[in-house]
Image (cartoon, rainbow, N blue to C red; front, side, top):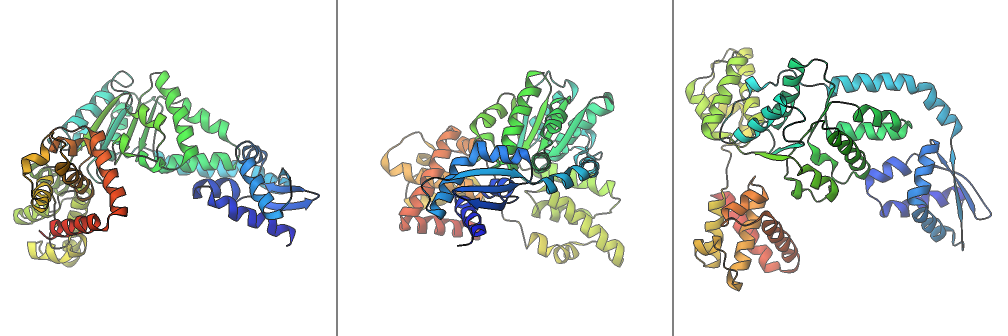
Amino acid sequence: MENIDIWNKGLSLIKKDLNNDIFELWFKPTAFKSYDNGEINISVPNRYCGEWLKTNYYGLIKDALINITQERDIKINFIPDKDKEGIEKANIIKKEVINATSFREKGMLNRKYYFESFIVGPSNQFAHAAALAVAENPGKSYNPLFIYGGVGLGKTHLINAIGNHIIRNKPDVKIIYLTAEQFTNEVVAAIRYDKMYSFKEKYRSIDMLLVDDIQFFSGKDRSQEEFFYTFNTLYEAHRPVIITSDKYPKEMPDIEERLRSRFEWGLIADIQQPDFETRMAILKQKAEMENIKLPEDVMLFLVDTIKSNIRVLEGALIRLGAYSSLTGKAITVELAKDILKATIGDKEKTITSDAIQRAVADHFQIKLLELKAKKRTKNLVLPRQVAMYLCRELTNLSYPEIGKYFGGKDHTTVMHACRQIEKLKEKDSRLKDIIEALTKALKSQ
């Protein structure tokens, strides 16, 4: 075996014990340097990377290399690559300029999102009121504010509206708005170029932090760690933190418990699927803004067809307007069906919790009221858990919302039911077949 193969094979063993993000960040930039008399030298891109590997992964690396070399003991040295480090330092100013420009482009608030243009309805009234309260009294009301809901329901609009409202009234306030993905990319860049101090200073000296799609942190340990300490610093200084997510905090198992608990310190506000009237109001407003003349019957078709995603609804409008403008054809229901068939299909099918409960009750031959009752007799536990599981899989309802449809059950009860069914499905093929049959039947209704 050539010496260089020792490190390559060692990396293959190490990779099996790590998630891909950590391996790509810390181990991929390394390279074999030399091996002699039980001592192996590994090239690392900079001193910080070497210290991190030694502090956090020395034991894992040592075990892997002993396994490969069959040595009784082995010493590992991490040697900074002077040439690479020199190139990085020579380019650091250029990279910082590029990164800063990129951040300004991506991280700036979207100036088209204001409270005035947000259509309020029963599905989002609470989230809107909470966001407005934070915007009018930053740091004094609901810190942190955690807004969650499905894709395309208005979370990004509200979080940007908060920032825009504050800047309009206090232009000197230092606000950072970005997605969790952009935050993660900045963490990686700061580690890669040994700029963690500047990163910490940047985020811990601001007046307000707005982070969109926090669920992206799932499984990204270092990003969670940096956000945790950033959050603590801002919270203790009474500086507002606003977060959006497509999941309730307790529904994010790959987010550290200490971080999830902090999300619950302030106020949690959810956005539900909008009702018919709200969807109609949003569509009319968008049509006026884009100067698209949409007949009433086409509006009714779109609103009745696209129920769960406002972004898709607005996108359908824009596409119809563009097609009509370019071809000179009038917008009709027939045209809408033809142009949008790839996007929306014949009709967006919505499965309700009531339909699921009825289907499960019929299959297991129990009364619908028994499914929602508090009784925990043996013949009711499994059907109830199956119904809760199907509600979670086939609807956009959160755990707390599902609990309400089952007689006011706590969200932890629903979470336990879903996990139990997941486990039982793997062991019980009959139960798996039952769930698949119920799912197929519900989708075909």
